[in-house]
Image 1: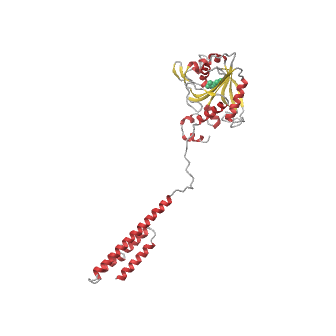
Image 2: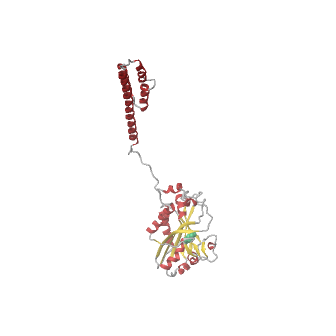
Image 3: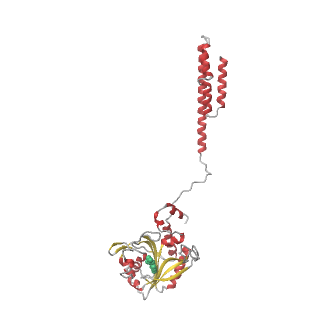
Length: 342
Ligand code: DAH
């Protein structure tokens, strides 16, 4: 009997040594200590052992069972902690892995366009002048030579706050304000938001941004206006930009003109962006009207000046090939994100 007990112990311990997983340990436990296993068989055989030896042999069988149980537990415990160790090791930080790129946010493309325009003009010698967005009819229209019945004064185009108070329709409102407070030479730009009572569409919005420029001094000439514009537009759209000047009418300048650049998409051949013309209109400009100078307290016999007004969204449209104004203000992150590296 004793030999039998020893043999079972040895064989079970050997099996346990081989077990490399928790499942294998459980299998050993079941095969040795389970209902049909050799230890149970020993228990049954105990009945046939002579009565005087039975207590002693019974003890030995119990000891065998306890030993094997505790060995199984030990091995199981050891395997489990090794497995846990292994998992932790597997989760450890791999410093050679490339990092995950995070979206850092960026300037809104209209703000960026505005800043680029301002930077170029400041470098050319203009300083920045602020003006009110809520404006009187006088500075927005009257002082700028708009006749009383001019269609722009109509309720259709202008948001009125009170009979003579409105949301400025252009940054030209700053012109006479700055003349009133500054002695020539005046060399300022007025960037800012403007408003018009328009149905919102791909081409129109109820608000937009302009940068007004005005230069007044003795002997300011039309050719200076042209060369200043050429220089400015080359900085914004590239050295190879081609400009075209067309006569046009604005009540506050004489002569007035519209300025086009050659279409950057088709290089003048004609495409959908330039509607087949090969040219893109970029701004309005002209020589400040003598009446406007007078309204600002400046003598047109002594001084002359030029001015222009440009649309910032229009510039961004042309530079980044954007064909719908609504995109700027929808705040769709997929649109805004595209300008991270601009
Ligand atoms: N204020 C005009 C507009 O909003 C643009 C403009 C045209 C401004 C000619 C000027 C100018 O200063 O000389 O359409």
